[in-house]
Structures are given as structure tokens and as C-alpha cells.
Length: 37
Image 1 (cartoon, helix red, strand yellow):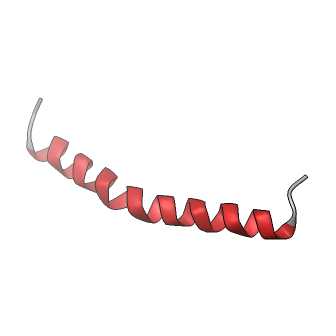
Image 2 (cartoon, rainbow, N blue to C red):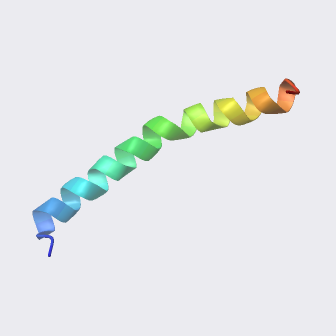
């Protein structure tokens, strides 16, 4: 069972990870859309 502090830490980590990952994913989508493979 997670404590409240651990849960907040995990939630902050995932939000940070998604914030860092989303631009890269959008960049890959735009590149694959403009450059046919």
C-alpha cells in the first residue's frame, strides 16, 4: 500500500515523464507524416 507522499511523488514523476515524452512523440508523428517510409 502506497503512502500519500509516495503517491504524490509517483504522480509528479509520471507528469514530468509525460511532459518530456509528449513533444518527442508529436515530433515523430509529424516527421512520419511528412516523410513517407
